Length: 334
Image (cartoon, rainbow, N blue to C red; front, side, top):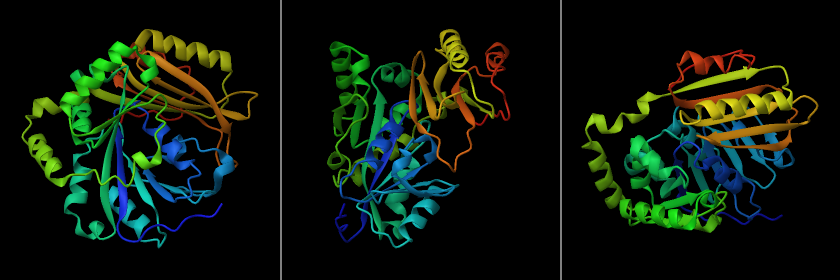
């Protein structure tokens, strides 16, 4: 396929944000695998979680993934600005750059970077702030986590994802609620974060004046209004031996039934005995999904990994539920 030449001038950057489980990774995967004739770069926290079809990968390293359609994906090593400058300095010309934040991130610092970093401004500009929300959980999350509100307020585009998980009346109410919070953002309703690229990049939707006003409001918030997420913690596990599928299903189902309300996000990649494909498991509260996602890449170690983010993870009873997982490492990082 012949690639079209990227336009000259600063490169548009799309910031992709949203709370845990909203569908950011699904959207990024959709962007990277499009055969659009355009070249995009994506900066993520861990591209190993994206699940790009191995047939599209032509080269990879610890920090860079290059695809056959010309797109590249690189990971944030320690500092976003350093990663972005490194990407812009390699001489390759992109049609657009996407930056995915973590689910607990407040987008304000990234927005400020583009407003005040003149070195970056010469090569790239913040084009859009895309916020994804989980239609089935956004109303409850707004009451619990200040980050969710901050993500919505900063948005120029709001994607109400997983719309198929709720009824039409509830969806209408959520759409109205979000519209009241941020009346200037463009709303979209999706099922699996399936968005046309033209709606996400090249929009010139970032308004520095409006965002400056939002940043000023954010700066005046009392500490108590932004401390909700401090109750969240995370546990991570690794296992070198493959799992029997029926045992894994039973264990995960039991955990979800007992502790689903406390589990904000759970994501795992599993090596299943007798299977060449990876099993990818994702859960948000009581809702979960498991899909086969391509064979293990030759450069990958067939090691199962599980990350749990939620509340009350220091509860001894809950931690006992994970003893079956052959723990090589376990840490609390949030």
